[in-house]
Length: 454
Image (tube, rainbow, N blue to C red; front, side, top):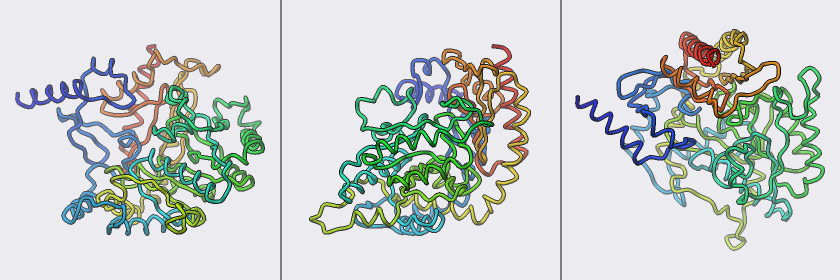
């Protein structure tokens, strides 16, 4: 009885006092909130003791499962020493050790680490560094940016200015700096009306036209490598990333590769840019940086960019940016433990059969009559649902088709979150083959149940 009263109290407090992100609260307060009480491995447990597969890795950041002993122990050991001290001046042991470790595992050519708190701030740092770099180089007209249609880099003002999703970004547009948007290589809905069999990546040609006209005024191009996340898990064709890198070098603009989601094994390599041997000028990291344990982010920079900020104190070349919890000792300790697990448990090597198994098990989804396209990159997958597979007519927002499917999956013990009518599959990297089968089985039945009754 006590537990039942406690549960109702928590649910009431949640609806009375809290405002959830990306949530229409008028609808939310009509529902019964799911109260997560604990987790273990790939499973979450609610306050009633019901277990759920964490099918989206707690918003794409959990790698090794919940309550991973090695990471728990690292945080506890650091807590016995110090939880937080300012990074504005002093350094700390875990931050220094992690900086060295990051430089050892990122693409060769990235030499400096600037810490922050989350993906938005990591990208905001990169944008500001790119802008100020050109100011220090005397190229004061280079104040604009290039980004991709459907791109998402965070929810701070700067990152929204380079965001290409109207639903999230349009309302704030009066606050933005100038950004040119290139077409996304969204092959299923090609903006240039090409089909894969007859495509020479004309979208790169459109990008080059933008560069030909505006390169003298552009500081950098920012993009998510291989996979555009929030925009719909859009998978780029092979060679596109390398093509972008080549154009950025040709037209003398910096390349920012947002590896916030794709970093730390998600695509089958430690970082997505390694698939095409691309080294960016700036690389923001977060989410999986410490296995999804706590807020931490880093922006990696080349020596060239770092050196542009060096000078006498009176020259005012300092990068005037920082956060209260920059270089947080607990977050850095967790990150060191997480990276060590990649080596100790051969995470990337053991991931390869899971990636292949996922590919094979996604194939039967093609027979479902409302599945338009199935996309996969590493252990990231997306199923785009349509009303009509011949015309590719999408479901309308009012039908809430993705939400309905996720609610059905929840009944069967799987927690996933849609991107509109696109179902996202992104489990922790440590998921087993059997667990992957169960996850996909529930998603398959949920799609079939919901779409065939509509």
